[in-house]
Amino acid sequence: MKTVPEPNAELLTADDVLGDVQSLSESLQRRQAERRAYAILNRPAVRSMLNSLIANGTCASDEAAIEQALRMLVL
Image (cartoon, rainbow, N blue to C red; front, side, top):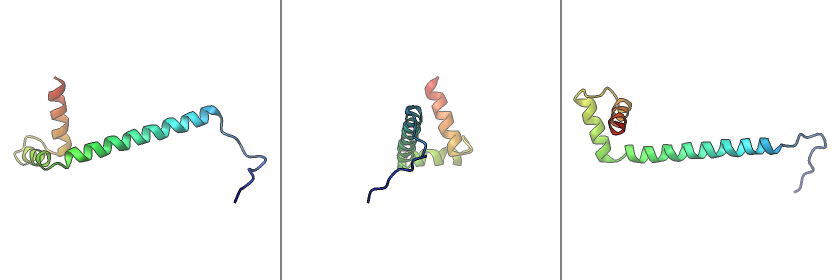
């Protein structure tokens, strides 16, 4: 069933469309990064390392362990 647009409806400008596309692209990239991070952190060996770091008091949390590891890689 076809619908007729409202005669007084506001049309999107090219900038509006570009903004929407950029926003959607950023959301998709963020979601892909979240999936990759989850897949890595869910690996048994990585889970075991994180749990060991927390258990022996080296780090207070998963987040702290990951942050410390990244800092060491950058140096």
